[in-house]
Image (cartoon, rainbow, N blue to C red; front, side):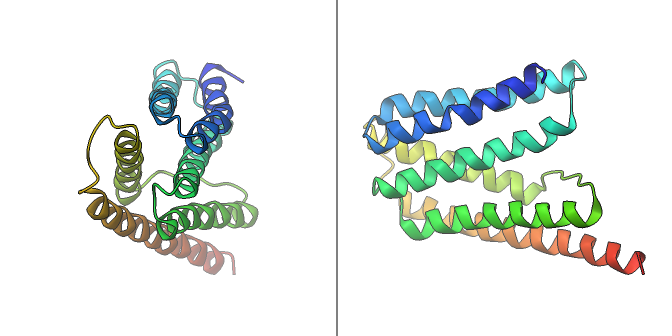
Length: 182
């Protein structure tokens, strides 16, 4: 364990606190917790690259922490009736499919080097913006309620598109590796 990995583990450990705050209507506090978690994501990556502290554990933990944070947030927001259930299910389902696919690929190939694609980066950005705007609206800090249906639609599109993109890219890799092994 090094400093970036410790920061990532702390980000995972804050998820139950965030869920508690969301389920108990403490939206202003939840925004600050989410902001801290988001900033820690950038900080751990910066430290790892700047001081050459990149590890295999960090390469797995960091995206896993992001997925845990997003999945927990959208499910808690759906439970609090601030986000449509169908959208929360699509977001969580996409991430679970990616995690399952990565696990299957790792078992088959023995190693996995995942670099986030441009569609995935865009999707993460849209999802995080959506969560912040939903929370900001619920907390009375902004009034984006008129824009939320449009944002939900954009989030649905980027989530499905990036999920299909991952399936196609990693499906090709798996197919190519299986044909190269014969």
